[in-house]
Length: 348
Ligand SMILES: NC(=O)c1ccc[n+]([C@@H]2O[C@H](COP(=O)([O-])OP(=O)(O)OC[C@H]3O[C@@H](n4cnc5c(N)ncnc54)[C@H](O)[C@@H]3O)[C@@H](O)[C@H]2O)c1
Ligand SMILES: [Zn+2]
Image (cartoon, rainbow, N blue to C red; front, side, top):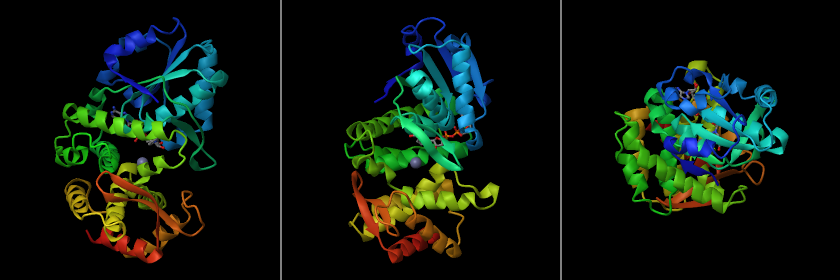
């Protein structure tokens, strides 16, 4: 899977490629970012600045990147450097993986979510026919450069969204990375200091890398990464049908999903109640209560029953926990259990 490097290593990475054979795609919002100025080596290269909302995560944007690579005469031994959040690294990686049957690419993720999730694991792609990530390929980046200095300008909501995926990672980590879950519980989310977060980011990436290396094509084990996502995706999708200011960022939907699924983890595989209590405290203190009503219950359950992760139509399938670090995949949930978990979530 992908290798990690630091900003200092970038020049030696770039030296591996012929001069004139490197192009950069970057998120337009970073054009005046202080951090960008530190990447002198990249500033001398051709840069394509892109809009990165989900509407631009399209095959048209991918084609713009292909055109940019052709216009710069990039050969099969060239390199594409992708600088941005998960939208940019997903489409940049996909464009690189398909241009002339695949050239190398390097990710420089600039959001917390992209650092710990989107830029490792090798999934690349774009949205198509209104369906998120419906076209794509598995193609790991040649390197990923983690530079937490980017995080200084990240809006708090984006920071917390990325942190939601980190909390999930702490709950499933079976290798006990120096007590990752308890370290995540005690990180000061009011200060959101990127430097203090760095070792936690490195450990979360290592946990994900270990899982995807064991199951690169999502055969089974990788399902542990779905903890919080059965309920989370339903909440996220429902919010997309409502008012724009109430749309849930992915990591927010995941923390609410984790609450529902930790509740079920107590009821079903017998998880102790402590992780749920710890998570509920963090959520109430920093994320706020979910903005859902009991009348949303049936629509949420219908969405979970249609989830493409289900093996049989109509059933609800979750990853749950026996304890911190002990995820169990393929747990079938009855409609009544799902209702109970949602009632708990709405009551926090
Ligand atoms: N490939 C994978 O395995 C994987 C995993 C998780 C998510 N994803 C994908 O990632 C995307 C979400 O990623 P994201 O949360 O990074 O969203 P994003 O790329 O949309 O970035 C979020 C916002 O932050 C801005 N931004 C980026 N860097 C910044 C910085 N340093 N300072 C200030 N603002 C900055 C962006 O312009 C954007 O407005 C989704 O499309 C999702 O499908 C992919
Ligand atoms: Zn996720």
